[in-house]
Length: 460
Image (cartoon, rainbow, N blue to C red; front, side, top):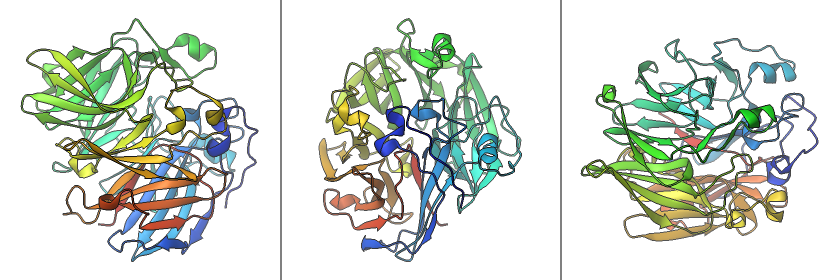
């Protein structure tokens, strides 16, 4: 068990539910309230930043903490284990007094802190802005940085899209060191099969993107690299009103045609729910930050809503329709098997304390994770709520009941955090009884800090 003395909190990213943990823990045969469905056999893994003394002391933004993966192993109706492990970048390994597992580095080495990708027999912790992912084992031990068997010449991305039918992984990688972004395709053997370079101005953040059967959908929005912010020691991206907001379509069939761009109103998008084609039009569901967005404070003047962008190549226009304006919504997820194809259901986390999108007293105490998960039926227009009355919920991840189960046949998993600073549960909700009591709450032995994204990795 590795131990570390916690750094004194410097700001609200290190307080309350954000506060880092200082130990790596392994626990077996976890207690459960309710019943774990026996059809759930696999691992629920979630990544997120966990600040380390000596590495992140001077970094005050949530996005910059060293990655720590938290996982729960389910099998035969039991919660076999919980583990948490830092991603061993070179700096993290040295801080823990360990030898770094050497491997390739592109541009920078960073303990990937954003998402978890499982593909071609490997589990990868991912991050953006020029760094490579790190491969981890089934039991969360770091194997080392990974460049897809030497086929990836540059950095990778935090968010990926898996086309299940084709067995491909798609990513859009950006870096402040480049004047372009790259669309990357990983084939079913785990090697890069194609890279397309897409020129962009001002080095914008492209945290996420969308995928349809015919197109890669790119978000070129006015949060761009800022030399002034970097020199001042702040998060090095800022709102740039001179940068035109636009959304792009890149053909998957023939990328040599280039990207066709369509203007949209000034806004920012961190995350995509899903996208698909409706005839000749492209529908893209996103969580949209209206107006000027300050990525350093994670605030803006307007709401964050679940919106649908309908891109019409014939007219050259994008129509924006609000699907839901309940609270402040983020971390949208869909049944991953439907990525790039028409979906009916989607899940978001509702941040009630941030519904006015202003950093206030509740945020100062770290209560920014939503206490409501929302299930959207985008066909009927109805929304169901699951409330955590005395806690806060992280991202909800859908797990199908079986490989052949329907879109709504399965479960939604999320870490549920005690607002009093106590322990954390893994809550399992029945998708078809979403507002009801969880079918199971797995009681973890330790508190888990708020984090980013996770994946259900089913046994094969």
